[in-house]
Length: 140
Image 1 (spheres, helix red, strand yellow):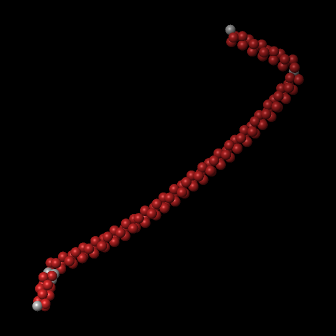
Image 2 (cartoon, rainbow, N blue to C red; image 1 turned 120 degrees about the vertical axis):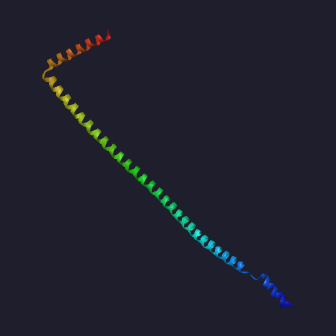
């Protein structure tokens, strides 16, 4: 009797053609999903790696741009300092030249006054009278 029970159990639980086919299809679909999942996982991993690289590149670029900006500012500051030093030196040279010219004119005028004192006196007197007349007109 036991044999009969085993045979009945096998007959009842035996997979039919459709069940076998459904099992194969489910297995194939699961394998495909598994493969797609691993492909997707692979792509996601690559994307994450690329994004991490981009992040590092952007950080490096930002650092480089900052260093370039600082170097450029330092260069321009140095140039401005050099330019202002040059302008200051040029101004000093010009003032020195003007001082020499004024000194030379003063000496020349003094020599002229010594050579022609009467003419200079009369010229100064005439100039004084003209200034006085002009000031009286503007006052009235």
